[in-house]
Image (cartoon, rainbow, N blue to C red; front, side, top):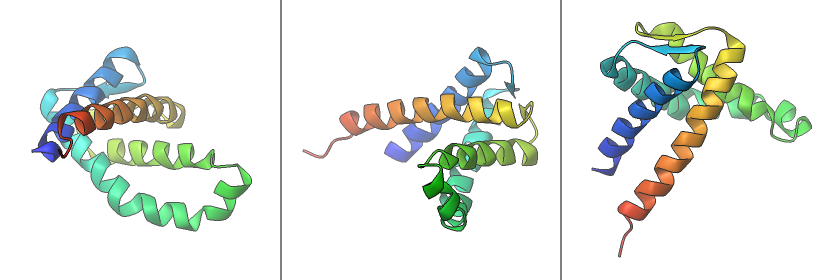
Length: 117
């Protein structure tokens, strides 16, 4: 149940990102659901590989390169999907930052809602 709520809230946050930032466009809630799924899939499958491969750069930049990796995952999802568009890398960077902050808020809210007693 928690996973379903997280998916729905992530799609809603993707729509919010598109609403507040013109560099990201989402055509419909269905497109947002699919995009949230693909972003999550990329973050589970591709992101760990990229983090390991770019570990020296990440260490030198004191972790700031992880923002670039997040932007690449966001941009890659937009490049393979219809109905989800990102204007460029800069738009992907800012969009992924907003989306990540909303994701942290979602995790915090769901952690309180579904806490094990």
